[in-house]
Image 1 (cartoon, rainbow, N blue to C red):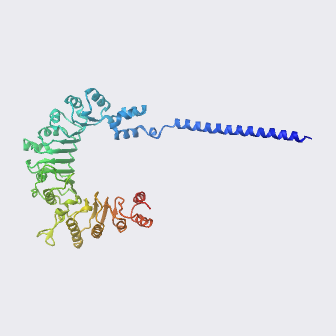
Image 2: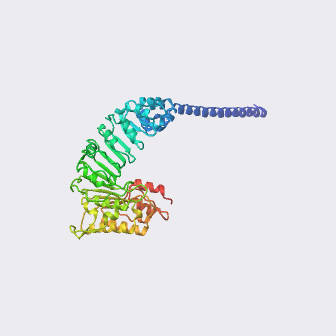
Length: 478
């Protein structure tokens, strides 16, 4: 039989063995963890970053958005460099002032291959324009914001079979050189002329040269009170959109023959007060125009002459269905005047739009009392006469309106309209809760006052789309 001392010795030996095995287990566990970490790192290293997993076509589309950083992007990786070099459109926008010599310009033009070109000729060396002129057959867009005359003179002998967009600021200089270039762009779709003032040297020649078969959008801005064209002398058979910011809009409207015109926009230009007079053309000339826009000036209110001109323009376009107006046009359009050919002896300029279906008013939150009254009276009168209810959209980016006044106005209009939409108008939460199912808020309201409760939010959820409620949840603090 083993004595006690031998048994204790054996126990000690086994305990030491246990400790050794435990230490070995710990070492193995550490080694396993380290090996797993190494494997994970190797796996991560073998998987390309999410951005590099994009197909080349999608990567090229992203680079097109930030093409002005193309040189920096090309240094990120070999793949990015290859995509940028193999995407001609990235090299198709040419800012001539960015080139100090023709070597780099020729290189970029070569990289653009046969892609349509966009040309910005500002502060450029005329020799650089000679390089770009070799590719005139690829010019798609030309934007000339200064120095138009020397540029037009240098290119006046060329043909531009692919040119579709032409934006020129004449800076109140002669239009004659433009009239030499204009007929050489048979595919032109969009023409924007700013800084008009000096009339063409030959009125009859200009009238014929302003005609164009493919033009679909025309924007004219400047002082044209000395321009005189024969009636229906400017033929624009494909024109769909016309924007006039000129001093004498009636003369141009009388001269234009555009059977497909469907949208018209008017605003005051900086060249002086518009000439307000009656339209001398046939009343049915622009019956196909269904959308009209009375836009504001950029940095100051429109003058009274512009507002009066808008009033006269209501009689030119009788087939309007959709109207977008700045709030400053409410009084000239909605205020009544005496007449013998209306039901109650009074009518407003906007009554000429007998087919009107929807009306959008910008800057409504801060309108004065007179504007608000004329608008309410006009809608109330339509309701009493049983006329078609309109879809009304009120927009504003200014300060919050007076709650009580705005709520009263809103509720009155709501009762007279097929729907009332509020867009970006800051309103108190309790007013938002009062809207009916027939009215919409195109964007989530900007709340003023105390936080909105969960109960209020639940009520809102029953009246607006899920995505709007989600947006409000992100805005509100409970």
